[in-house]
Amino acid sequence: MKKKTLGLVLAAVLTAGSLFGCGGDGGSKGTTGTEGGSGQAASGDKIELRMAQASAADGAIGQSMEEFAKLVNEKSGGRIEITVFHNGQLGTERDNVEACQLGNLDIAVVNNSVLANFIPWFSAFDLPYVIENTDHADKVFLGEIGDDMLKAMDDVGIKGLSVWESGFRNLTNSVREVNSLADVSGLRIRVMENAVHQALWGALGADAVPMNWSDAYTAMQQGAIDGQENPTTVIDKNNVVEVNKNLAVTEHVYSTVSIIMAPSVWNSLSADDQKILTDAMAEIEVSERELSRTMDTEAVSTLESQGMKVTRPDKDEFIEATKTVRDEYGKDYADVLDRVAAAK
Image (cartoon, rainbow, N blue to C red; front, side):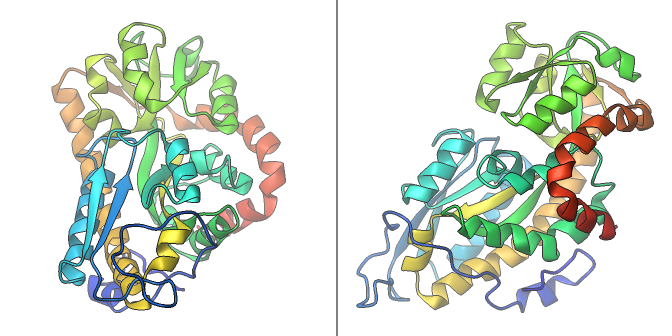
């Protein structure tokens, strides 16, 4: 499968055929009406699916989930209905991965840093400053490497549908402006439950505090932690400005999310209905990136207007300080990192 880059017209994307291979068996099936003799739902059956994420509804990912649900419904003539759940309503990201493995959740949007707990080589993308810009990101995640990521999910009992953009991650805190590496020292920063992210912030002199995102706002509000790091749109849409007044544009990691599905539910669909989902996903994975980048630019202006001080420290200091992290954690993923570097 050859995915389309942002430089291709959308019409070309819409002509793409069935983009992804089938996953392995899982648990229970989605609500698909009367099943055919082969164990698949007939193309005319009503299908109701649930799709969940841990973050806010009005970010680029949340809006694109809603657009995906709408597009699938249109392409299926109203037969396939996807109900979307935001803000961790159906559990944490790890909960959602495990629910898809068991067939208890149909579709989930999960940060690839969480998936690295299931597929270790995904940790290569958590290494600081390995993705240089959005053009580089598209070549990696919309190309052969992205294809291999989706195929790898089959081996851990989930069906990979697509890789979307979350964006370059930046630092916020409630203590002080960050104008240089020295200003990071001693800050207590919420990070994902991911060893590479913890090592990254340790190398920068911060105290990394692993924590579910759903708990981070309260922890910042109560002063248990000083700050967090996320793409700027996530910072904006989750009201971080209410508890942190300093934003440093560090762009230390390019963050992605994967759209995953319960293999048992995927395999219960007819070939025609599988194609409806993959065709819709091929369109949305392009528009989601466009929306993400527009919203990221707008978010900086919005945060400044709400009283957040935005600084842009010299990234060379941060790149040099995190070299030990790339060397230590990257040695197990040298082949992947070579491919990422070659995609520039």
